[in-house]
Length: 70
Picture 1 (cartoon, rainbow, N blue to C red):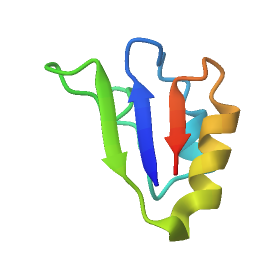
Picture 2: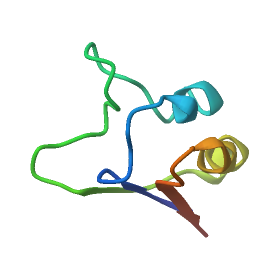
Picture 3: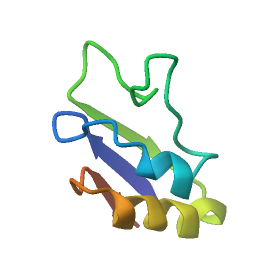
Picture 4: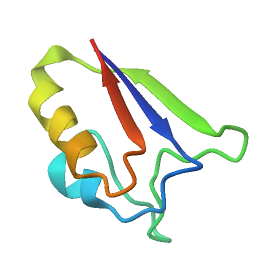
């Protein structure tokens, strides 16, 4: 399963962190820890064991910045 986070859409509300704390976190400045100055998009493969958590994070994102593909 693949997750994509559009970092241009993301406004660091942190709902993904509450829904999937094993997959998402905020840094010391309250910004999504997946951010990189060199990238507008974060992509990663996620273990199927975290599928429910990941889908919940995508569902609760207020800006729909998280996309999940199988």
